[in-house]
Length: 296
Image 1 (cartoon, rainbow, N blue to C red):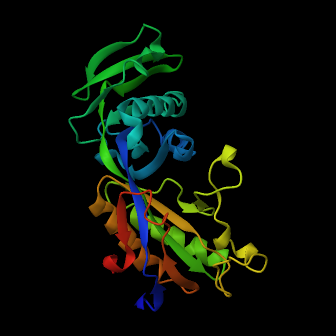
Image 2 (cartoon, one colour):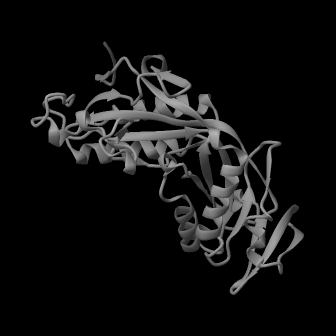
Image 3 (cartoon, rainbow, N blue to C red):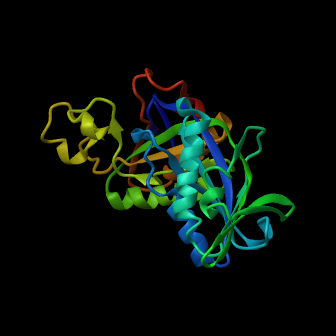
């Protein structure tokens, strides 16, 4: 048995998938509007419904942004099977509804790749033909006239292939412990470039098989603490009252592994954390298998 900080690390692996992502820099005139645009455009992870996942990578101070204003970096992801067209559609939808409508915001490319999406077709034309391109901040920008001035977005944003679905499960003696340990881990993950946690602390891990396929994945019932005395197939230990999951997407496997390792190191420092595990699908769905024992 392997342990970290006297907490058992289960001999298992997480099962992750290839995805397409774009990293974008958002800036705004003030921190309130920045937070609205950042969180609004990345809300509601829903790749299980064949849409997209969004996550906040980090917030930036004025000295770190392209235009010298408060900023953030976000990531938008789709399953790789959806291709460039799916990423373009989902990214445009999130920008139009989550950022463009927030006063005094701008969007810049933050992805280092030769693969490009032209934002004119699905975002620029929100100007209804009155939009124009111009050089601003040493970049080619689309200027969309809006009722509070202008919305600026870089004409070409890049995308690349990364890894979705790295994850850590941690067994706890209470929800209070789970939240405290998880928040500490999320804080550390934000320091790792190229990673994001679309669900943050996820309270409801799911499974593939379901009695209700019309609504998609349903609760992973063997791991629900409230069912441990009601079902024979429960896998919840007697003293465990909470099993959260932290899902991590990353621009490459190295970033995913680094984030998972840091998560383990951070969570296991908290009293009340009983065991570390990970979610997988028996090795049948994900291309990438990241073994916990290899990380420690």
